[in-house]
Length: 298
Image (cartoon, rainbow, N blue to C red; front, side, top):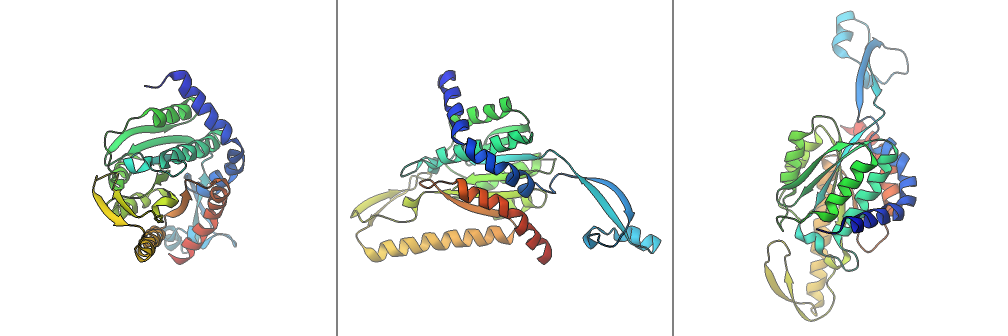
């Protein structure tokens, strides 16, 4: 167990280092990601020219032979959960580990939500749900979440993203936004994500390291899967082998992106060795427009 004062210093450092990003994320995170997610039925009223035809209540319209629409009010506060991968593959990183990058992302988004007085929750997962913290408001609660992420010792080295998605689909009664932070190196998980997406906003932040995408020319090396322990000897001096490896990684990433998009799950790839501030702000500010596009084609 790390010294409590050291943990406080680490969290303070994270808050200070993400302060600039927080200012830029506030409006994008709240108004783009969560807009329309927390809504409450207000009343049924007669249709007036200019109303969105998608809000028409067809049962009431048929009953009175005159168009009526449902009217909703948007809740001022929102709820979202960080679903963070803590499996052993997250310990890899050429400059910064994927686990540290995930912690920075949770801190950045968490402090942005804090300034909007939103509720924040956490789920840590490997091939099982290792820790679940229900969503609440306040700095003390957010600091507790970051404390947990820093201090938690994983029980398992492996990953099963589907287990975590099924858990949240069962326990979340309030409509929420779920932000998944993972390298997505996991057995098939698309069906559980699709079920979770039926009721909740789902966002995938794919944290990766460039060394995983391209092998250096260093001769014979032994590669090991950090989660299964499986080892294989490869010759990295073979240019054709390196090129084929790069192609397979790119194909896998493209397939994952298309699969997520097909289920209306927004995703962003974040590299451990690159600043994420600008891509993250652009990503969240663009979600609202993409949601409008989905509404038009579904």
